[in-house]
Picture (cartoon, each protein chain N blue to C red):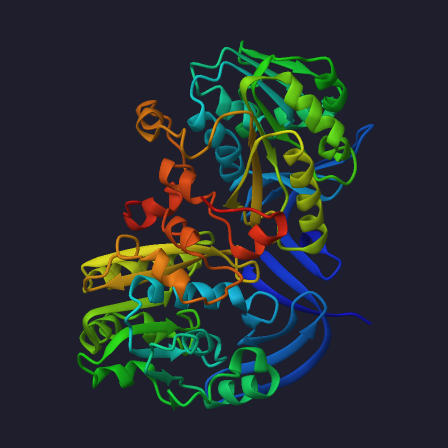
Length: 284
Length: 284
């Protein structure tokens, strides 16, 4: 008997992975959590049946969501991560000795517990002394924060389900307020390729633009996400992700990465025409 | 009853598309040819069960295989296309009024006939007066050519089956000989993500490097190809794809594209570290 995990990328497109074993399955108060083991991708976990993290390629997503803003503003000291229960984003952040404090706000404690048990590859730095975990609603958490963070990373699920609030105008406005004068907001920005994802992406981008003077979008190849063409939003009060990139300085930090490098950093902001048109974006 | 087309990207990974109707199926002397119609991707055709072209996203592949070399060397006059039976590569080439002659060498006449009938979107320029079609083995065709083409585009299937000869040392050596003094060779270069494709990619790259002084690799997001992370090889006798790019000149041609633009052109040569390591590549 063969076991396959299948995700519907649209109602007409399916992506399937052959499973060696299902390691875990439970319903948290927020969502269904499953962990599988597979030949091709190693262990991976899904929320409500949607792919979150695989051992094989989580490095791509986590490199891009962390090192792009960190290379653009290397003096970042205090960071807020919203979501990111698998710990991969925190793991990459802890590699910067210059970072003094990391607050991670994850609504679903069970995700963290499950990842600590089954995905030590991503969760291993959640006990770093600079990290404080808050099991709360990120939307509420940022409401009370003001001028506090140099960087906010929204490492959320898609805007269907518990992640929905993290794509609202109210949320982005509160992020703006919670950021310091030179603060940066980075968020997972969905994909331009399939309609429902593209719609979410366009909405998110439009809302972020209402608050932040600099709104850029960058892209990466993430084969286990729908279409494999994934976007990240880079919004800031002052910092320009390309003009303010000090490649020499970042390279001098000696952070070894499997995906990110400073040339790719620059290249990732050059979007295809059909994506530019969706969001009225200019490559620079 | 639901009909699904399924491609095995590896023995452990499947990509499936819901089909409205199968429009065609036959065995040519070289391969099995199928044409389907689908909600998500429009019409698409497969060779030996592997995805070749979909109406929805063929623009990505064809933009990148044609406009990158053309923007790097806009005075290109004579072009050889090897493979490319769907006609999409020729269609993009015919948009340059400066191109005087296009030779297309496709081993399988049935592919061209089928695409003319079912995929006019890509095949419609095969009757352009500048185009000569040769239904021959590309490997043999280039053997007798010398200092003749400014650009050779290898728009082949994967190196498993009839496309195999187009990934050999002998073939690349003959391409070098068939190119003019400032000639460029571009080829579809497989994907770095899944092992068997990555192996083919590494082999091809190594062989091309034995002949060409400048060997670069660039990437695009092609969601219907395995992993969605697709590479192209750019090899030349003299031309540098970034230093010799005259963005202003290309933009002045007024060629409208849905994927390609000159900023993305530059960005596409910045590869992730794990790909750079596979082929001993330096981003520039």
